[in-house]
Image (cartoon, rainbow, N blue to C red; front, side, top):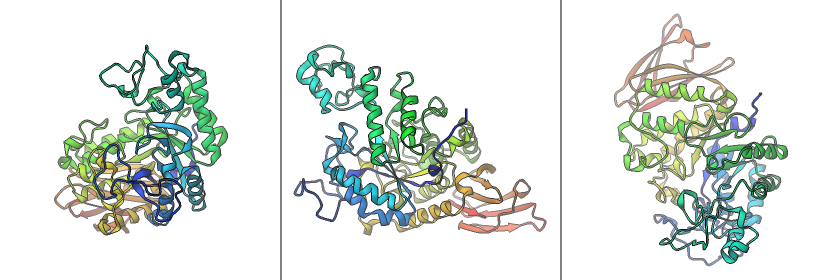
Length: 483
């Protein structure tokens, strides 16, 4: 079977936005909640508090995102909900009025598309919330509700709020706030398919699927893909699967997954023994123990052999998300860890994804701390921001960094060197994760060209006269790109 994936994703740089925390509109556009009491923007976030970010605020920041080089946005859920993260869906057909409602989203979508920025929404289709109308009807009417077979009811009465008594229905991860859909019910299946179709017709460019591995109804995700692609063959379908995802990346279901199998070893290599174990040990990825370059190379080669190349090019690669601590906090505030990992992120096959604020050095431990308000400009780390801008610009400028093949050239100690090649274009990327400077001798006979021009970073380059060898002198905790 020939596997096809959306071509635009191969050339995308994503920006993940948590809508309540990215930007609050400076224009008086709200008809509701004009005088609401929000948490102070700069204060540490709480589990239940709102800071008042909205979609108009995102629209006012599109110039910033475009200057950064972003051409795709992944939004965590935007539908009506009673939680700041909106994974507790109340209404799948209505954008939360706190974010500006459907009107604001339509305006934002048009503004993004006018700038050639794609928009991917978060689909929470495994479970709803106890405030979801169909489930609320069951709470009111018990076994007489026409929606009773839409959820996994165990016995009566249901107890949605009192933690001292059994809930008597299945909630995701045992959370009674999140009743799980009965996906074996054909009506539930059809309802979810129609939601996906509705927002694609509205104009979105794809779906990120929350915990899709929980849905085990045979053929569910195959039908989902067929119906999504029937409306928009270029729509992106990306699943939240943290581990080996071959089961879903067979060409009949998802175009990619959130690539935590890239994130974990990349952090372990670049941050090493700086990793704060309290921030990672209860997460579903393992950016520890520290890796040497040879071990990192092995993991990258294994990862690149795990899925078909067409899928590799549409993986959603990341270093942090709303479900993890931010890298700078994982690494104890060590900026070189962030820079080196970002260099590897922006030069790896697949679509890189930047979690809002990471590009300006926003810290944050595990949630809710990792969901802080986007920082005031006066507090930005300008060096990290410029580092991101330059790397993103290079990725856009050189097709080999997007779709070129990947060849490890050197992996010894804490020095890792690889090449990305597409036709006659060849890019060499070198990383020294060690605290001492390093000299590397590369056998350039393995390369089609002889990259010797420094595009990015710091290195002293010495080429042997016959062109068969190149010596690189790398500063400590630094990386470079050659062409």
